[in-house]
Image 1: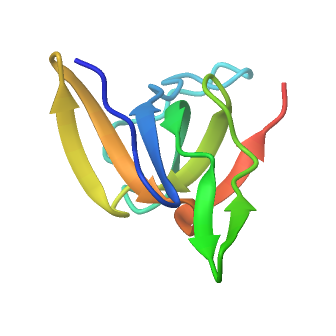
Image 2: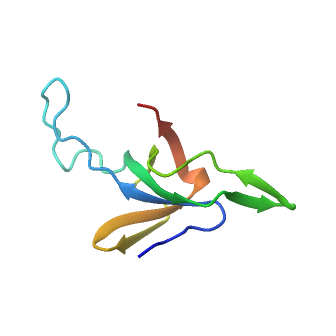
Image 3: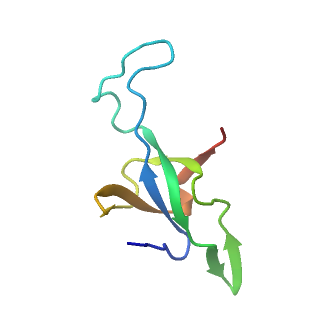
Length: 96
């Protein structure tokens, strides 16, 4: 199934967080459930039209981003949990 978000929406796939830090400290599942989460961009519309002009979204497929866990709509596609969010709810782009 192919999904293409519209307007300023972005389709994200959750990236599982590390359970052990680089210094070998174990992070339990129940720690700080309200924190932002890392996601991978699956699809993005070119931008939102405002007054006849396209406001570009500076993201592309495979980018890694940070967004709040409880922002916007959770969906399931082919057994994978995904999220559709407005571009404004993406807090940061992760540069590797």
